[in-house]
Length: 413
Image (tube, rainbow, N blue to C red; front, side, top):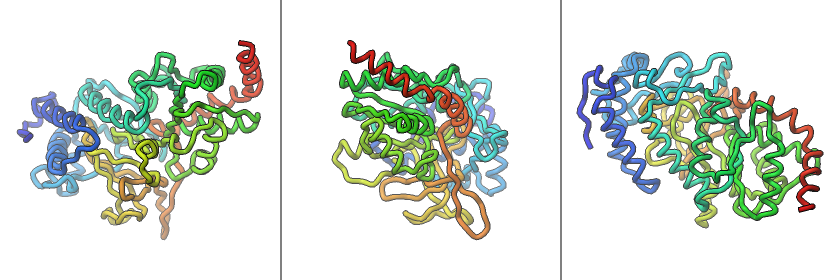
């Protein structure tokens, strides 16, 4: 499919060009995770660049400063990647923001007082639902049509400005049974719901899925260890967490986190899936671990790069691509980013693997060395973590008493 250029005013008014572009992106996604066509990816990426160059003035100025225009760019690799911090200084939307269906904040990790804003129009929301729905099915629920999900996050009604809450509501409705629920409310952690659900899963043998913020799970695990409480969830139960950018999950290592998942919940490591989600990039990047395990593949843990994205690791000084295994900055090209910018240069450190990539931290620019800072959380960053820290701590103090009460009640049935 080839795209006909349109005057700038037509781009901004949801022209046929934009509709045709969205149709092409959706068709690319719908062809599935086994499909990959470099020529088609290149054509769609360049069409997006043309759209975004004409409709996002700060991006156009940035590209002109780089000396790159849609007429000059022939390959997707030539499209200028916007530094993720630019989302905190400029509105980077390829449509009038008053038409946004999604409007929320980026993490503001570098400067918590200055958060970027993410906007998506209805057609772009359809794209993100298609892409992340396909990925969630493949890498979180490949063996279950629906199951009960407990979400360690506030609802979008409670936190409408946090992308993680908005995204997980879609997961709940698409993959959860009717009794799926949020664990975080204005009153804090619904500890009774969590403990009762874990005990019920043990008793009935129905697998349970826990999804949400890594720090929230760690608080719960440590409270269980303190009160000498553990559960044995049925085979097929799983946990999907957002966070752990440098192999550090809150106050414990990745290995310690997996050990706690096993000791506290009875969940084996292959059923522990980490996801990298960023407001500036529409596609989520999931660990391959569960899909590999169920397929009988032996593979080291890594993030999958879907066909409609490209991820490169570049040198922190020259921004040239590095060989696999070398640590540098992650640069993402995402066709689902039609409403923003197709190319984003992050300050996340990672390395390419044979089948994907892994993330290890956030770059801290220090003379003479490559250093990483721990980052926790996803789609909400520090804002989400601070909220969960506050809402969890006080309620977890009564874990031991509540567990004893509910266990006793269950034994009488």
